[in-house]
Length: 373
Image (tube, rainbow, N blue to C red; front, side, top):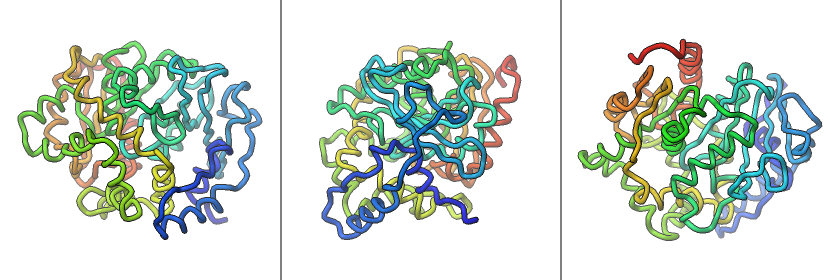
């Protein structure tokens, strides 16, 4: 039997009322994609009936289920006002979950410009021993997107993770973040150490390392130039849409910034999924607003990370210089493991999923009482 395509699987796990949107663009190619998306994504979504690894009874009916022959499927739903798990912010947060409720929680935070789908390989890998939850961060994908940039300050993003953890019925988790999600993961670990049993970060240094390094190294300042570009209103969003979202596609596929020849390259269906999510009206403003507040929040007042920490790094990262990875060690006051993959890109968990998953398993099974190396 032919395996289901990833985009069809993704469509199945999204709430049915959110499957079809109109893409407002004059591009002929995008109009063709819109028609294709509507055909592919408009198919019926099964209503959750209390399946294994699913949401609470009060949330059933807002979820779809996928079972691609690999055991319990992926489940997607929102923490909503008026339901158990309401967020203090009043925002609805969309996430996809795999694994049984009651197992230890593994919480996954994506980067820019991504959404929960960047963790698809890890959702399937770790569901055997964990309740694996991949979020759409504030402003991304199916999660609510406040209109004002002040709603994307780092303290709001940190509090989101704390509230989500509690709303899921947990008081601690294994926390994993990539890129901007890695920045948030570091800050959650610093501010709420009692909530993080182990910290895993992919291609983002300790925030204090980043701010100190960028001021002393013009090469990193240039690589981080998009942080400054994103301070402009509306124009960055417009640039992403030009030429049928060419910038977005190139980030993942070009020789300069994308996944290399030896990596697990994104399929056409994977690229379609990203284009679909970020081509929705206003879909880029929330993600870019994350960056429009960063200069008001750094440097940090508190720095130390006290839980066991794994830092994974693709050496071919076009946006982050690898020297920052080793410097990060000085801020971790517990067991610290750094692994640099020489042929891997910035998009590490998608680029080298098998190696990344193996390294995570090894770290998770290590004794937490080990002293820092």
